[in-house]
Length: 209
Image (tube, rainbow, N blue to C red; front, side, top):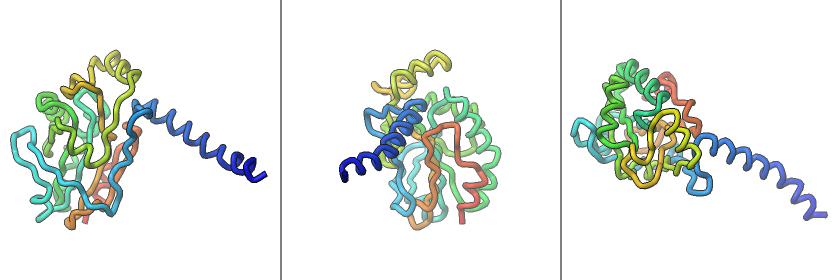
């Protein structure tokens, strides 16, 4: 009787898990490999260290001595949703800057392709081409892309994801947003596998000091 009851209680969670997997697969996440969960609020923020597409050295530890940091992950210059979002972000950047914060936008693509992203968005913020994928791994946003989704992007957006990133395997970040407080901890995050749902500028501003 206890075994029957256990199975009965387990069924809803199994169905939910199946639905979750279907949703992830639809967004291109290869659920047979690693599924990122993102760095949690209250955790120590990983160090962000690299070069912007303008050749400037970026070190989050140095920035945090004076400002909070808004970290935004994007997928690539081929992604129309990313381009629209980053363009809107650029238009509203002054409001974020007025809250004594700096915006770092991180993507997996090559410097050359990241420059195309910058041009499309008319970016006034700092873009980091994370070609080693280290920043994305540290923030736990990186996932492997399904073959089906790769074919979809190649067919409709004429882009080979792996080639765009100069990588052997196609990987993308969850387009998450994090706010790092002056104490070096994650104070707020927006983490959604659905790339069509992004952190609004208002929600970012509301969570800055």
